[in-house]
Image (cartoon, rainbow, N blue to C red):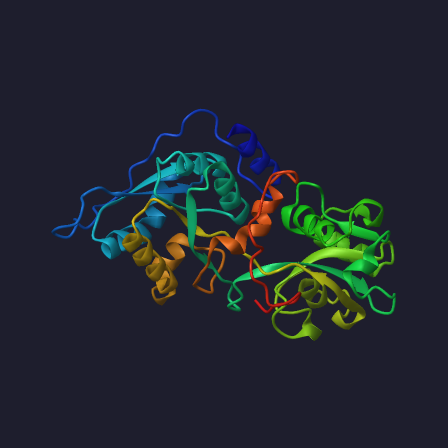
Length: 328
C-alpha cells in the first residue's frame, strides 16, 4: 500500500503535501436530520481533503452534508484530511464510506484494494464531462496520424505531469510508438510552453489538452489551443490534430463497493440532480460548473493502467470508445 501511495503522490500534477501521522476526524457543524423510522442509525462516513482552515471548510460544505443526510434519512459525519493520499488510505481501509477523489486518486484506490466504485463525476460549464490529451502538429508538415510521430520531436510537460505527459505517452506507446519508434521527447514547462515551442518551430508536435467540443476555429471550447487563440498568439487553423486520447473524466465522487445498492443509487441520483440548487452544488464542487454525470470504473481505465506495471496480468477489456476524437 505504501508503494502505491508514493506512486500516487508522484503522479499528481498539483498535489497537497501528504500529512505526517494520523489525521484526526473533525466533527461537522450543525445538526443533521435524524434517520427515518426503520432505517439504520449508522451514519454515512464522508471524507474530504480540507484546507488548513478545517473549521471554515467544514462550514462551507455543511449544506452538502445536510443534503446528503436528508436524501438518505440518516446522519452523515465528515472527516477531513490534509492530503489525498491519506484520504485514499482511509477509504481503502474501510474507515470511510464516501469521498470525492481526483481521477488519479480513484485509480490509486482501485489499485490499493479494488473495493471502490465511482458514482458520478463533474462536468464543465460547456457540459463536457471531461477532457482529452491531444497531440498537435503544424499544418502542412506531413504529420497527420499517430504513427507519423515516430522519431519526431515531441514537446511534453515535465515528468510529474499526468495528463500532458505520462498518460498520453503510455497510450501512444501502447499504440506502437515505443522503442525505436518512440518520438524524441523535448521537455517544456507545461502544455502552454509545449504549444509555444510548436508554434515557433522548435519541435514538430506537442502534447496539450482540449475539450474537443465547440468550434474548431476557436481551438475548441477549452484547452491549450483555445487559450492560445484567445490570447491572440495564433490561429487554430494553423494546427492539425494528430492524435487524441479517449475522453478522460474528471475525478469522481467515490464510494466503497460494500455500501448497499440502495444507498449507492440514492447518492448517484442525488448527484446528477445537484446543480438544481446552486448553494448545495457549490458547497461541494467549486471548479466544474456543469453538474454531475454518471460514470463507471471503465472510464478511469487509462489512469489505472498508468499505475499498473506492464508485466502485471490484466485480461480486462478496454473501456468503450466512440472514436479518437469523441465529443465531451
